[in-house]
Image 1 (cartoon, helix red, strand yellow):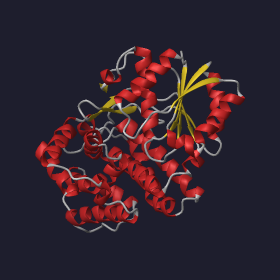
Image 2 (cartoon, one colour):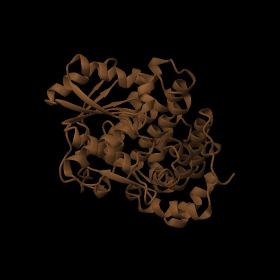
Image 3 (cartoon, rainbow, N blue to C red):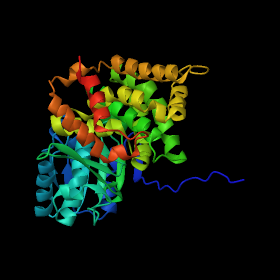
Length: 389
């Protein structure tokens, strides 16, 4: 009798410190890497919130020289990465510290590999296309959503073609992640909701990914449970630090899952929307999740049912169609409780744009590990569901 064998899988995560006061270890790790000249990558929002200033003070107190690069917008642009690269090279920075959300951390990853390899960041698109790793990278996340602080993904907006490119490489895994849940306490409810839904999608997609494994499944399911319970609390009670901690933990588990199992069609479609229309990534994911689950369900019934059981949904003895409907309605209910609707898109979209996004989504590397191979026509029909009033 032949026994089932587990497929060969790898699992990569950086060193990380999780908990209250993690950010206080910034200077220690800079010194551990013998860093003498830091490029501090952040954005104006983090400067205004005071978190970037806290890191500056830590560096100053330790006598560590630094330069700030803060010209980063949501959906980080290729030209922003290259401007940061110019500064990194000119100032001879030998270590990068990034404090911010996914846009900041992805930009910092791009700066590191572009400066070390002396190439434009778009040349690294694809899987394992980075010849040399960048300088040591320390990431300090300020949102509970993207998990860019531990992932081997960097998503950069190609502004000429208006499409997001994915750089997937062990070389963009940060060397250290300093994960301090307190830094998420200044997020407003909208950002809390959208980044939290991004984390939830990470976990959903990693769990049903064709690249999943027992190791990633463990983290994905636990992430789903935590985020489902604590995202509404964090949204409604912005000063609830316990909820913030649990959301950061859920995001972290989801990151460990998707970084090693990859993602699926939700992210392919969200990348296309963000690249062409510059919509917020978390918003796109939130609107697309139930639509894609409805589409994917028949290709991964057992796994979606495990998610339903994790959420406490009563599905025993029900037909597959009823089981699917329960899960889809539960996701929709969560989204509505967070006040996320298609009205948030605040834009009219043309049929030509929907067609272009559909083509881009099918070419996105995240589609490769989706449990069902999509066609352009099918993806277009899914887009029409969220753009049609």
